[in-house]
Image 1 (cartoon, rainbow, N blue to C red):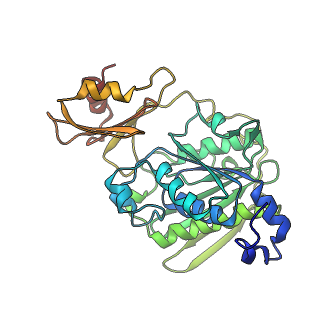
Image 2 (image 1 turned 135 degrees about the vertical axis):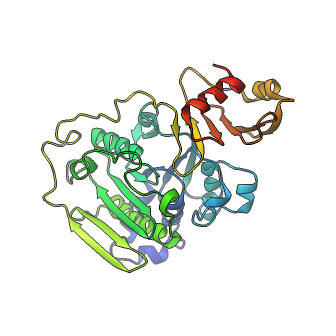
Length: 346
């Protein structure tokens, strides 16, 4: 039973009321990405009283995050805490009524089916807090396949855009953007920067769209875009954009969901290469500490091992127990493969 006093100002809204608050309390939400968008989104939805929030993020907190990622502080950056863990701790302190499930993982075609599953049911809504197009197209595939609403959001520089997608009712992402942009085709936060208030505006619009869907309010489909610096805003109607020839919602081809696990790739905005988790490989972190002891600086934690080789201080390896590895200090994939083999084998 939701605490009427806690949510009293929200319940007063005719758009929500007591029934809407009960619907929020019964809702199950998956949030992918806990960065500039995801931290604001998570904070607003947890304070609004969603019943269950699964937070999925692959990264650790860094100093450059603190300018815009509102759930993290200097202590999180100093300890290089995983974002999902740090966010869950802050959110739990804000609203202990909400069940929060932090997951440290990189979302891909191998784990997304499991991530949308909560016991014997699926989530009611998927939220996009990601920083790359490939993952967004994967979210679109899984949402269309299982008819789960999802909310796209993007922000670069001072500009942002938001789109709520309800499979079967509205156009999906591939109706509007048929394929992901080529690498380097569009600006990124690393190349163009990002204004924190612009990211917060995107996340707030996503949060409003989420509350509408979860409380049973449907809007006509539209793409909201804006420039926070100039104050310009545009709403583009998508009522006629549903495409019967769309590969995903038109023909049921889920090309991103059907892709095998991904090859190593350079992380957006970082001089780093990520090797993805594998079903065949999991690291026993205590054993790895023994193996690497005396060969460099080791910073073990319950979630990952940070390792700086003594013979190359320009490198820093983040080694996760699920088999995922991020090699900081190079943006060259072939060199990263060599480094991986040199220190971790295989």
